[in-house]
Image 1: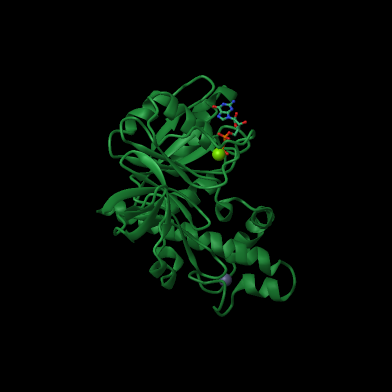
Image 2: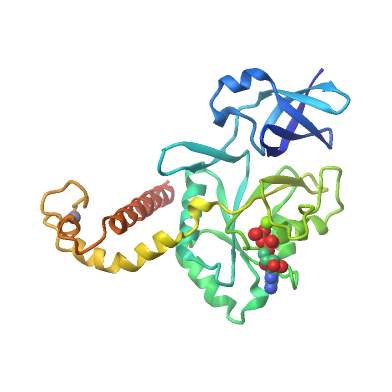
Length: 307
Ligand SMILES: Nc1nc2c(ncn2[C@@H]2O[C@H](COP(=O)(O)OP(=O)(O)O)[C@@H](O)[C@H]2O)c(=O)[nH]1
Ligand SMILES: [Mg+2]
Ligand SMILES: [Zn+2]
């Protein structure tokens, strides 16, 4: 008999599927392996499953996805589907050295691409006295975004976030490792009675999240906890490149054409500086990548406002 389920966990070919409020172990039907990896079941997917043994199920089909949060691997151009069928993409960021508006903007772009409503969750507000400063910086980056200021230590803002999570809502928590995603997940779970689908945190002492995992609250809302996305983090390399950005920006003003692409255009001052060894080609590449992302982001945002 075929039943409908929802994938709550994936680990190296092993799937956990919520079927009738119970988490079942499952594998996929062989034909899946003839398809691209993006077609394999992902956390959030609604699937058809058949029981194949006492404790084993087989996923026979994945329902069409409402949306996909995709990480685009920049260098080989491949896509990785992180999670699917979410209503909110929560960008989780701490009031500590995790706070980074540039990274926030990259997560906003990710939500934009997926067509998912972003919400921003500022965490660890118990650590600072001037929360307003952090809030202002966020509002500056995204005036229209819903913002929650929270602390799992003092329970500030948890009820407000909880209020967003009504019946069929699915929210995915994204952000750096250490931002407070798992603490939030636990706080949200603690405010509702646990169901069969609920498992509190990873069973390892230091609860570092290794994979994406969905938890279902008693009211049916789902929270997907994730590890950090490395590609979106400010790597040491891009941090070093950022230090060179002011110099690159200054050079950009000296290009022959105001719409210079800084790559092929004639009279490009930046390319000339690279050629003469004044600035580093890898810094320029990082600068151009970031600029492209910001432009794309700005375009989609102004497009949305016009509609
Ligand atoms: N002071 C403070 N620390 C927090 C808060 N939330 C999480 N932490 C701490 O931040 C660290 C990382 O939290 P965790 O939830 O594991 O982050 P994750 O990697 O995003 O899942 C842990 O040591 C938590 O105790 C908070 O609201 N206030
Ligand atoms: Mg975690
Ligand atoms: Zn140029």
